Amino acid sequence: MRQGGLSRLRVWHQRGPDGSDLAVVLYEGHAPERFLQRTATSDDAFSAWFREQLVQAHGFDFSKPMPPPPELAIDEELARAATYSCSRGAVEDPAGWQSVMEELEPLRVEHGQVSQQIL
Image 1 (cartoon, rainbow, N blue to C red):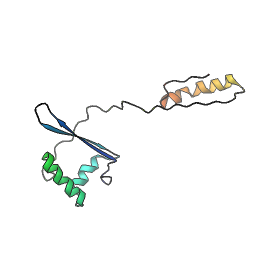
Image 2 (image 1 turned 45 degrees about the vertical axis):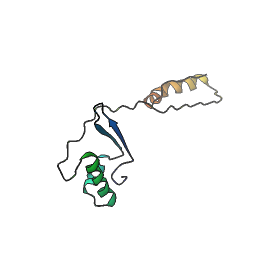
Image 3 (image 1 turned 45 degrees about the horizontal axis):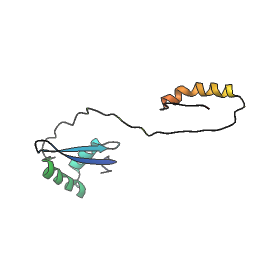
Image 4 (image 1 turned 90 degrees about the horizontal axis):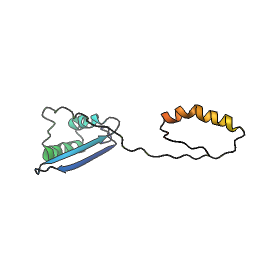
């Protein structure tokens, strides 16, 4: 899977209210579009096994014309990791130090700062 451009593959099976099944598949990596292309054309053991599984589980057959790719509807990162930084030091020129902090604030905000407190 890594040779196919993936760093992660996740599959969920969703049962519909009518009893139908749906596979929800998430491919992640630097080139996830290469994964199916490589799997369709490679003769290694994993690719052959994976093709068989796709036909059996989903009726997806690489020997037939490929369906159009899915259209992305939502791509939102809902959570970001919080990072806290605490510094303590003696300052000889508080006004000069404060002006440097103010000057660099746009850069900190651009890189994700959401708040600061100076005591």
